[in-house]
Length: 106
Image (cartoon, rainbow, N blue to C red):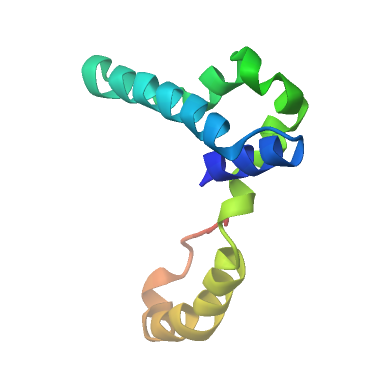
């Protein structure tokens, strides 16, 4: 999903979608090999950041790949689920849970 944002940013700068996709495809295969063959973390975004082709959007890459861009309404949905369902379900265990501090950060 993050690479689609990168592709669209490059297209907005006047670059070919096909050329950009091909650059990402090559880097993606390289990153995939590192994950599969070496057991290391996926470094695709780091590879994109150091590839000269992507220089026109280098300053935007962190914003384009910000995880919060890809969760939609999930935080609101989780909050609603907790307040409407989870808290109600836990009510019958209130005496057993007293004193325990439980925190959920979304």
